[in-house]
Length: 67
Image (cartoon, rainbow, N blue to C red; front, side, top):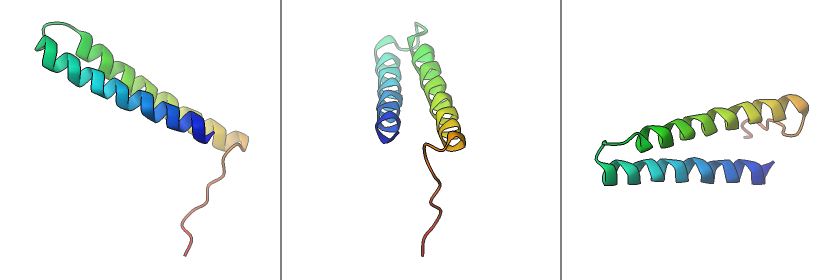
């Protein structure tokens, strides 16, 4: 599960970087920036849902704050 979360974070960051690249290159003339940001939001929601499902199925366990 750690590998899946790490890959998801890498995809989210790369989508954000591509949105920045399109914003600088296209100067807002195309919809590439909007598409890249929509992909980022979709990936973030999918990661959140996957974490909730993994918790429900017992693949991950909450540890809480240990003192």
